[in-house]
Picture 1 (cartoon, helix red, strand yellow):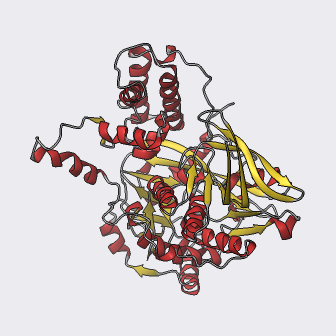
Picture 2 (spheres, one colour):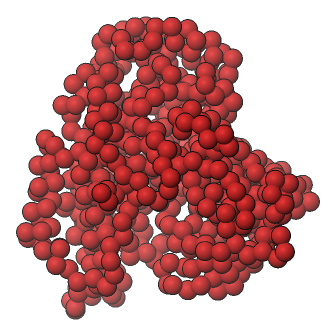
Picture 3 (cartoon, helix red, strand yellow):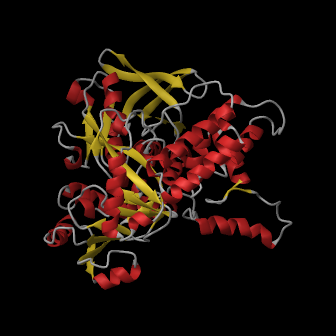
Length: 537
């Protein structure tokens, strides 16, 4: 396959899709390449916090101000992906007493809205919080469903006339002399090689940006900062809770969907594709949770996972001390390599702003003037609703009022209320037989049973769908492989929290899949992948 475009964007995370959306809206012929599925990388592996800016007001005021500004914009342009939980910065007995006054002053300087409220008011709203809190500030934090957000962005790119290619891995940067002119790689789904030529390439590959730049002969120091998070089995709080102290490990509790996420750690790792969740990290997060919610460790930990922050710091500082601000790199002036721009650093909350700066720079390189309109453009169709179980339940109950309107729609995943028709619709849109794609699309298997009762059902639907809806015939090695791969990903996240109720649930899953279904004996045609965060030692 050979193609050409004006702007080629490498990386389909929030920044890459944001840049693709921005560029397409400005009238550029735009193509976004992503080596995995939507939300496969860092954008789909974070705690779900839409930052108010409060976390950074003292150490990184530029990032704080940007977060406050973008927080307000994103609520307007993609409301169905954001839950307005609000947020608290709460001082526990373990936090420095003098930090609160510094925090309040810095919020004013950075224009981050923060209002001190009585502790009793906070405890009335969140009764499980530590009753010994001394001070509480209310901020404009929110929870963001990154899976939904990235799907909205990908749809927006296409609606604006751009293209998004998933599972297309770049293996070579093509050059003519010193100038970057395109890329070559492989379509992972088919194995077909591809070559794409572009007037300008934008490197938005996050923690992998250094590897991409290296292919072009440029040195970019991006330190992957591993962050471990744990999802608890219920919403212990309905408000984002931050510790009122300098940023550190395990100091945020975020209500996302039906769970609460405690996070994060911050450890530099040498490779964004190879890292493990360590026992000490899980222990630390559970202990820190006790400071915010006494009895935290008695609640069920559902699973643990990790992502890697793309931290840019030429000085090589400690990852926790590195700025969360972004950096725009012009490789023509910096390295003598025209045709390539890189956006590194930053965070999910500021993706739109980063994309605007990057496409502004692209316009300058291409000698055109085209205004950015993303701050005033609604990403989603009017009437779109936030993904919640009540909304899904209402959709399920609607046909029951008049059974003649349509036939019953079987629920395949009871935890997340995913129906057969939703799975088939997703398969039609994506053409992908990959169960992990359905998880990111529909939250299949992300509830309390961690796919114990839905994975084999969904695998059966996939086999039927891609075999002309036949329920008979020989086993399908591809479906078998995808089922095993999906179960490995689920069990991998459960393994670090194997105690109490989680251990009992895992034993039930093992009994279903090993003792009853014999999944370990399924024939496949390829070896299993080792996912990031998989323990190899």
